[in-house]
Length: 399
Ligand code: FAD
Image (cartoon, rainbow, N blue to C red; front, side, top):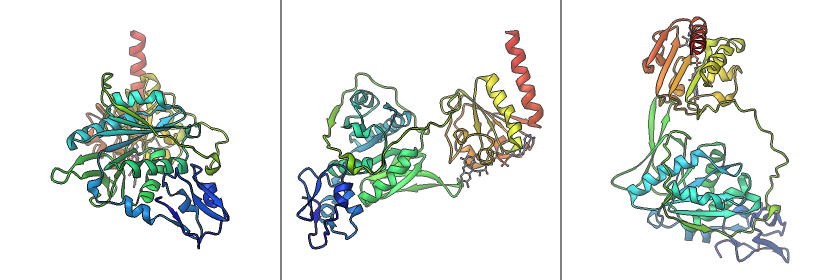
């Protein structure tokens, strides 16, 4: 048994029994007892006030040298039962890194009947899929997912574990890293393998984007990173790719899940998803107010584009945070990006510089955005944008 109860310290309070998501700890004769199918997730230790749960045998066994770890695991996220695009992008990147290391790539997927998703995960690059199927996994809950992923990582020992830097990934990864006693590099924008050592190089902008940081985890495993959605390219699926599906049986104890879902309240989404749109029209502080921001929406409307915004415009409350482009917003790669009254701070540019054609409208010809623009229109946006709207409408009418 990896986990032990120090009987002298156990008060028999039953907190651990309540907390175990797998029903693998029971209070017998006023002392906690670990049952046979314990997965060593450590959830009991986290709630044990007297500190009676001893994980040291587990840690001694499970912290061997980095050489004992192999392969790359990608955590595949679902939304409403469907695979998220960012997870497929991550698989594409995982495949590239695994090929470099001559190792295998595995996807880990949790859900309420996710079996239909294993095939797409394989065709997008996975050699193996670890699947956990349980009605209690239909939507993300921190404690349960952390416990399960801890158990899987400690059992299969991946050398690298990648998650998307989504709301879920940003919630899950730090907790998981703390449980596993390893490091985590959050919000990476690129990954590489160090030639001499095979160690993962985890790159991300630092100091407000003024420099790139290269971070390594040389001594601890797995090497964990979250990766920003939309910065990696997804691979074309190969329907003939072969892979193995390993179903991990669990008995999730709903009593051990402290968070209950009462109802889902969905935030109103912009009509066109900014990340998928071919054209994005974005507005910044130069719009000067919420009423004026409407001309951005109007231009987007006539162009069939999605609305984007700088953080300044979002912080002012002129538009939804779902529209924010940049370091703390979305990363977009449309065919055309029109930046109106946006100065082009590095934190903004990180999120849009991969766009096909950049059009910037700014009255300051020295604004940084003008340097990366393919078309820099110098002038007052309150004259240029209405003129553009008019021109598009006129052209449409003629056609
Ligand atoms: P400003 O910098 O104030 O620029 C306004 C521009 O409008 C100016 O260039 C001006 O010349 C022009 N203008 C004014 N009036 C007119 C007019 N009538 N016609 C034409 N042009 C006009 N920012 C983001 O956008 N996204 C992020 O994700 C993000 N994350 C950040 C994370 C961190 C940790 C930090 C520190 C900052 C972050 N920022 C982010 C903020 C960023 O540094 C800038 O402050 C922000 O992008 C500025 O927004 P802006 O360009 O709209 O405003």
